[in-house]
Image 1 (cartoon, helix red, strand yellow):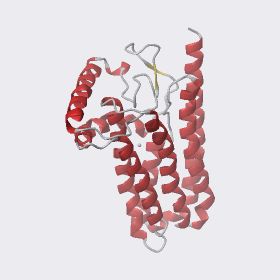
Image 2 (image 1 turned 120 degrees about the horizontal axis):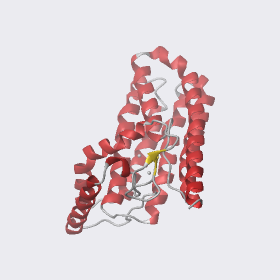
Image 3 (image 1 turned 135 degrees about the vertical axis):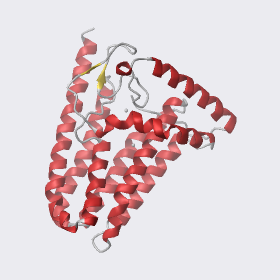
Length: 271
């Protein structure tokens, strides 16, 4: 749903959108000319995320790399890029896309809270989590590639992710009460992982997205769990263990993100 991205708070006309789209296409072609290791299309900085690079354009190396579903984001963005341009041409802003993701997450979470008596509602989880990832990718591309950025967008991006996670995951405690505490720990861990990623930026490093339990990883796990529980109801008995393991992995994610941010800062200070 990555330097902080920002977005415009006002819509743009079709003529302006067309010019911005052309500008975004030129930027995309420039990025494509750079060897893959030195270009990491993460929100708004070519050196943000799991890659570490002393200077943009120079080959990067992976430092303490931890695999994550987030690694698939560049390919996912490529598929969504035509849709993103259509959204921009229609006059929508990244902020409006972010607000749709937040509102949808809260609404889906509220519906899923009744899944104990209506198991079919669990199917909303994989469907909406996929849509939410698409919305997060679209608003990020609009902000970065079409120069639609404002400080308000940065706030909405980070705060929106936290609100969406809580709105989706906390209601799962109503589905299976024995998993309440592990679900609560998992939800708190989700917020802390994003805080740890942003903290690097606040300290002067880049925004970090290391795994193993980042936003995309959490979405995959919870979506798959909802799907599996619908088709195999006995899976719900394993929820306490699954969410407890997930909570532990969020702790590992916090450690990875903070340690990589500190390494990056030490590297900057050594120059």
